[in-house]
Image 1 (cartoon, helix red, strand yellow):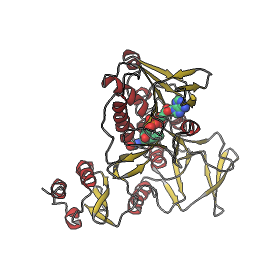
Image 2 (cartoon, rainbow, N blue to C red; image 1 turned 90 degrees about the vertical axis):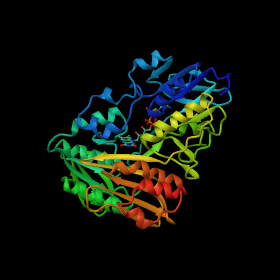
Image 3 (cartoon, helix red, strand yellow; image 1 turned 135 degrees about the vertical axis):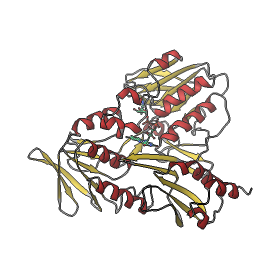
Amino acid sequence: MNEAVRHILIVGAGHAGGIAAATLRQADFTGAITLLGSELHPPYERPPLSKELLIGAIPVEKTYLRPLTFYAENGIAFRPGETAVAIDCAAQRVELVNGGTLAYDALLLTTGARARRLPLPGADHPRVLYLRDITDSLALREHLNPGVRVAVIGAGFIGLEAAAAARKRGAVVTVLEIQREPLQRVCPPEIGAFMAELHRRNGVELRTGVGITAIAESGGALALRTADGDTVAADIVLAGIGAQPNVELAQAAGLTVEDGIVTDEFGRTSDPHIFAAGDVTRHFNPLLGRKIRLEAWQNAQNQAMAVANVMAGGDQPHAEVPWFWTDQYDINLQIAGVPERWSELVWRGDPDGKAFTLFATDGGRPVAAITMNNGRDMRTARELIARRRTVDPTRLADVTVKLQDLVRESAGG
Ligand SMILES: Cc1cc2nc3c(=O)[nH]c(=O)nc-3n(C[C@H](O)[C@H](O)[C@H](O)COP(=O)(O)OP(=O)(O)OC[C@H]3O[C@@H](n4cnc5c(N)ncnc54)[C@H](O)[C@@H]3O)c2cc1C
């Protein structure tokens, strides 16, 4: 970016915002940096919120990207508890909820996403909880005690991780999922079935194909009414029904938004002075040849780095195979690529065993890979996906053939 950029304002002090601020300094940006965040904590990582923090295995500070002192030491004006409410693109100014304004030469939006609320009668009950930030995690943990009945609505990653944590703390857990299998939006049904079996083995009552229509309090307990007329009793409810991007600021300012702030591979929005990174973006991925929105640690980290480097004068696009992981009980599941469409599933290893890799291929090209306790396959699996070349499915399934050899062959040498 040119020398006229003397002040970069970052709105959203979450994972992407924190990484971007640090990266700007590493990239020798010498102008002023302001990092504005609604929350009171310094930027932190969210994965432990449904895992280690939720079971009480780590203190809150362990989730912080960097200690609070880092920001002042690096000339980053971190302003916790401050929320931006409007952007005046023409004047290059942001309005704050307390009435103040902040001028910028370049603006980075890293406002993330929020938990989608249950659109049901009774869902405003104080014991209907969500899980997005540290406050949510600590509030939920308070309830996770032996014998407490926890109803989890939604068998996505957050719901399943919370269910596993609740079981670890001795709670009685029922998971209610409207689809036929868990994780149906993000994984082939075979993986959903594997995860369903895992949870049942660990004492979760998992009910699929069940829609909840209302929640009511009755005799101190919560009663969840199902679409087929049944009732599930619980002491607390956790709703894990997805997240929605915090796009309102951008939308009101007239930026292009399509369920996410639209950016190119450099993080540029439709306004030349405004960039965006993290969960809030629908960004162009050059490896996939299309725009995607991701809610994933890797994207918050690496996209933020790439965009901050561009803002500091660099010219490298952000281009990588999407990657996500989840930890539940003794299982580590990793997903590379976007398993939305495929023509064939290729198993590498025993699908009934504890460790395997599943490739989803489309016209012979690997488009996604899922490793179950088999993370050592992940790096090469991602290379195979990035090549976008056809691979012989018999060799892909053969564990005696090294994935690295297939990568070399698909590169033509
Ligand atoms: C419970 C949980 C578990 C997860 N586990 C995994 C995992 O195992 N693996 C994985 O790959 N990913 C995981 N993720 C996803 C990953 O944590 C997110 O993708 C990542 O946090 C996104 O970072 P972000 O900076 O874009 O958004 P966020 O981290 O959400 O940060 C956005 C910040 O902006 C602030 N903000 C919003 N609007 C404003 C405003 N107007 N003014 C000021 N501040 C504002 C918000 O308060 C928030 O602090 C998990 C997420 C959650 C919630």
